[in-house]
Amino acid sequence: MSDLPPFKLGYARTELRRTLVDAVLAGEKTATVGLAESEQPEDRPGARYALLGYHDEPVGIVEVTDARVVPVSEIDDAFARDEGEGFESVEDWRVAHERFFGRPLDPDTLVEAVRFRLVEKP
Image 1 (cartoon, one colour):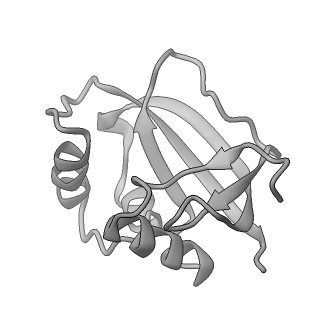
Image 2 (tube, helix red, strand yellow; image 1 turned 120 degrees about the vertical axis):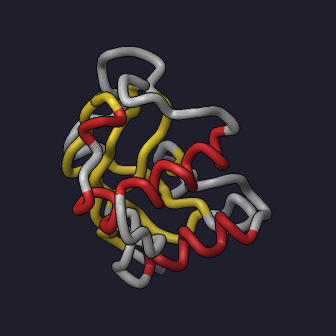
């Protein structure tokens, strides 16, 4: 597991990290999003990563099933729900992500929308 690149959700040693990782391990979280650095996704379908826990320790392996760079306006209710954080709507999703990223997310802000599956847990 340790030879795989890291898959980090939230920040280490935060309750958000604990909550997100627990949701992945329970099968409730199968999607995540990050601000896009370019118009090409960093992740590729089939790529495997070590899911990092609260202390940045490997707690499982995830495999990317889809990765796209899209404007925020293309995030739909299904994707928001698949983030496994209890979002009832895209608006709930947007507000939470603005808080996390510390900046407004305009409809044309580019994000990398990643879908993944848990393939191994200890």
